[in-house]
Image 1: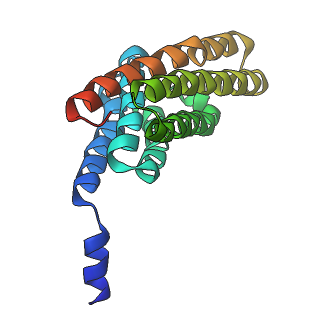
Image 2 (image 1 turned 90 degrees about the horizontal axis):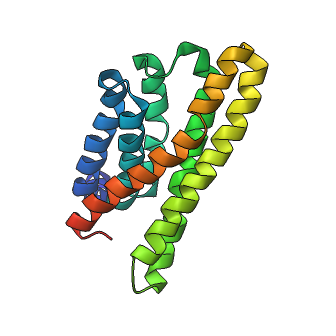
Length: 179
């Protein structure tokens, strides 16, 4: 068998199409919607959907896209550019935590028993990491009055949007029969 044929056989076309669709939404959403309370849950839902539909590698890849697009699309002010890598890492933390608990469901009869702890703990870890990181960076790089706004933006709303994104993803995954 030719190498080209082997590679084509190994590609999961369905997962690839789902990944490209989710990546497209994650890429263009920050250019269209400039409201954290709308964009945040949708992006977090996309990250979780990518994990369940396209796999861990695809989800981790998507963790990098929304923050860059939010910065270049204006949703994230340019002064917050130094925070972008930390937002990416916080997305990775969310995905890895949800993945860890999702893998526990293989030993659990009820998938909700592993999905929701993954989302809640993942959202908490994402919030904690981003809150602490943003506070340090904001104090070092920007004016004090702006640092307070940055700290607020990177605090509890991150937890709320991650949990809301988990809820959106749950509804979609439930309808698809994936959880």
